[in-house]
Length: 325
Image (cartoon, rainbow, N blue to C red):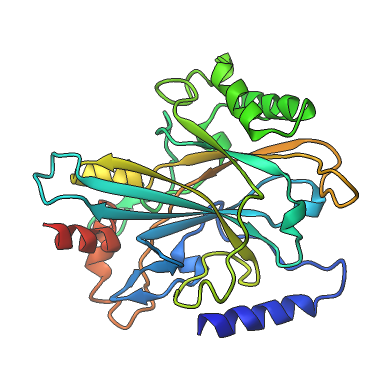
């Protein structure tokens, strides 16, 4: 089914007239499995890409890119694994976040020269929408539904910090095209504008090249049931993953599974005539997994109560926790 869908989508994309691109808008700043048409069971979405089985996913466009790069996306998939049936207070739950770059099918990724900086520590702020629901379905004042929340970087990061990060990355890129140089420069930098980004300034971050991995092919993904990018003709390239250990309490699991990850994407001009950009460019994207339930499922009525409790962990996570007890 997935292979047929991807084949049809790819065929349609190739039939578009030259210069005409598909609509790249999303319904929200970050969307999850509902919008990405992930499969569901018992009203709960799930997503398997290659060997990765995700509890939830998040998809966001990279903002303000140079026109040759329009439609680029970041996708984050999250999963939880039990690493020992010990007391829930023990650090025995492994949370894995996997990051994919989504690229239009007509983009030559071999000419995509650049790096991505992933800031892994929890931010000082959270998105403020949507609000949690009370038992009668009304908004609960001043309480955000963290699993379902979404927004953009200016909602959670001071604009001065955003500007300083993007400028520093571009300055480094003008002096070379090394991701190692970018990592070392950020490690040395104090960036006073970002002192409140996390509890320790820039916190823990990693830098990964964009062009070291090939996009997933249909044959490599033939056993999967999910392609969490829009439009479906887009390619996905796994760029990196990050793992943390936490305890099994609802608060700890929710904070890690639905944590906001700022991603600083830096593009360099490539050597030769195939460069996609003429000068260094950098953009900050704030990405997280977004939880939703499949309200169109046959047993949607039975899951209405579960929807209200999704403000705690979400149906998928609840099922995962039950299996670990």
